[in-house]
Length: 427
Image (cartoon, rainbow, N blue to C red; front, side, top):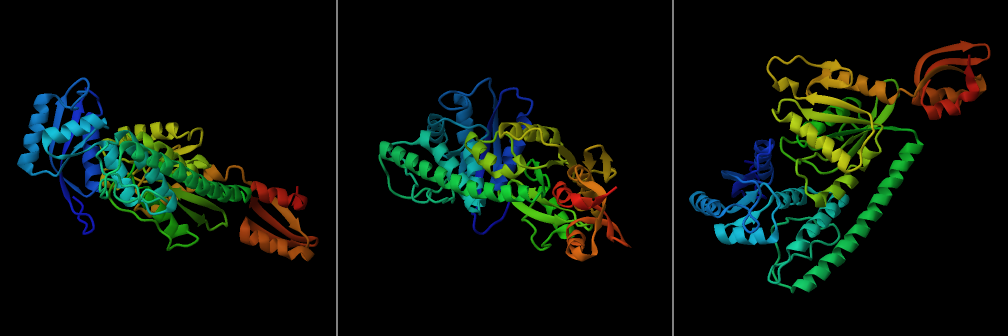
């Protein structure tokens, strides 16, 4: 249970239907982790084997009664279900259990709302919240519209006072959705312009992707501290799901004057709400434009294969494909007897806390993103000494000799640099 003065802990009971799904146990463990990430204390779990949800109450009648007894016994504030529920199922379960009902989708939206910090993240969450809320409107429900505008974020479950009529609510929400989508489109256009500028400058982009809490931010911080242009600009990291929702980009400068951009993207989770898929697509634009993906896997988690499957499905759903990928089995230091760092092709086993692991990772990244760089010799006339300075500052220089005709340099050049210095290349 996470302690936080700003977030009073709520007692919750987890509820799920086991439909003979091989991943059900893992989904319930993940649901508990999501609840903890949302400052909830899980006091009990109720499950039922059922081929399909009851259309009216999700659970069967007898199980609803059992759930009511559990709520009373544990003095729970809320029931959190593993599946997304229909509006009528939520109402009927609230009536049958005497407790508030939050489904998995609302839980994830709640977490996203509390963690969103940047304008883009707030806009994405606000849109997803309204999309979730729209089909669940009731004539007598309190609708919090004032803070949904302008990327409002805020807690999804705490609603303001005042009731509005159903049609007024619907029109208001649809209007807000239209405004928010346009605002998000404008912000994304600015981001696209920045990415286009980087592409023109021929700076390579490497993106960290993977399941939430796999260690992406830890890897990024380790590399930033060693090679960052600004070594103090680390990103927030914590041992919880969705510790950060922001896509952070840092420039790394290697000792030989080669550099690249490293992006830390929001983590994935199974059964991602449909309303957030579009938000992920925008947030992961850096990954979609990357030259190389680093899939980070929590190797110490017994469910790591399911996590990898979730990552693959999400990347496919948001349209990120055919980009070279390195698989990083992280947290090897937490596995007894595990030898690391270790490499098998494009698969690495390492610990983000280990310097030797980070050295190996950098070397593999280098081999991938600099494969189109060319090593050549250039002869720069003495009167063009500024070009020698430029190469010393921006290229990887292996040797320098002074000959009668000028300065002979053995250098490794990017494609852009190779084109710029083509007239000075000597055989």
